[in-house]
Amino acid sequence: MSKHLTIVDTTLRDGEQTAGVVFSNQEKLRIARLLDELGVHQIEAGIPVMGGDEQQAIQDIVKLGLKASIMGWNRAVISDIEASLACGVDAVAISISTSDIHIEHKLMTTRGAVLERMVKATEFAKKHGVYISVNAEDASRTDMDFLIDFAREAKNAGADRLRYCDTVGILEPFTTYDRIKILIEKAGIDVEMHTHNDFGMATANALAGVKAGATHVGVTVNGLGERAGNAALEEVIMALKLLLDTDLNFATERFREVSEYVARASGRFLPVWKAIVGTNMFAHESGIHADGALKNPLTYEVFKPEDVGLERQIVVGKHSGTAAIKAKFTEYGKELTAAEADEILKRVRALAVDMKRSLFDKELVYIYEDMQAKRG
Image (cartoon, rainbow, N blue to C red):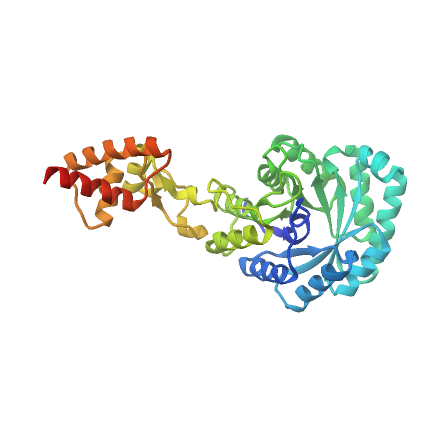
């Protein structure tokens, strides 16, 4: 299903809306540069109408002259769009809720009024020649017939795409595929998947949308975002490349570098078990796994660690086998006999249980030295 897809990164907008996360302006500029160098096609840089530092950061990002399109996020309000235009962005996102629960309880208005506000804002933006994404907030809880009408009205008003927002992350891939396919067929507009991870399916739902015909995918670095976060940039790109045969020519070897920077800037640690970029992705302790990885990495690795900026690790601990012990000592320039490897392994397992962790290289050397001293 190889085809062109546009990756829209919203780390600087939706990512920063994570409770407790604030990027400095300097960090925002650095993140924008990194995203551009990775290959991101469009960067949602923030919310211009907030003014102050937010507006200054967006203006400065625009001045960087990046290859990526720079988008400002707006409510369906003319003054919001004017603030975006004043920052010099080449694209605007115009967002308004479409679900009845939002229309009634948040906007306290009617479906008709929502359509009117969206069309008015879209037509205003169109007159200024910018790229337009109309965002259907809470699309996944929106009546399908109304959503189709909304998408058609957006297209007629000049929108370039519809952002389908699974705002509260309630979709699963099978429903996502069906709904996106119907929406594209009935409304005839480009669709962006904007998926949240409340049930752990943001990346899966983004891919399902792509299979149904979506042409744009919204992501954030490390899956940063409100509540459980968004579809993770690194997960989506690698899944597209290796599972859906869609290589977008991203600089994937820099994923770990970028993930670490965003983790530090956001004050959110990067879990060792994080998909794609976590250090445990290529750490092998289990005897069977370590033995297989040593013989041929493809036995337990679906891509190379250097593809995402990581390194392979053979971890020695409770679940290790003699193959890992021998391999470790080969690194130290020492070839162990089978008997020596068996004896060291027994001591490794006992110490790992006592310490409740895997062992450091120096601890392995101490075990060997102690064993030799007792013999000597």
